[in-house]
Image (cartoon, helix red, strand yellow):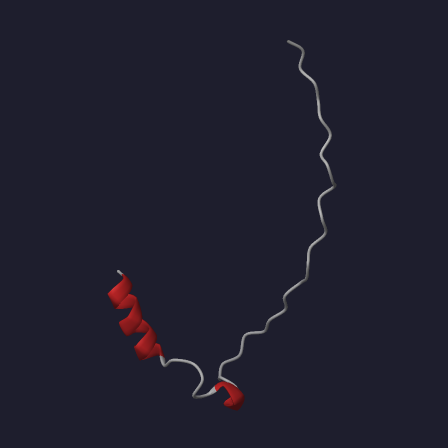
Length: 49
């Protein structure tokens, strides 16, 4: 039996997008009330473990 190299059907596709972010010390006012408080997250994580 002979080994045969088979080329890939298509080249590697380029990245779909690039994410950017910045770290802030305070949550923007527009997000306050929409995200859980740190205590709530901690309580939820205790249930998972």
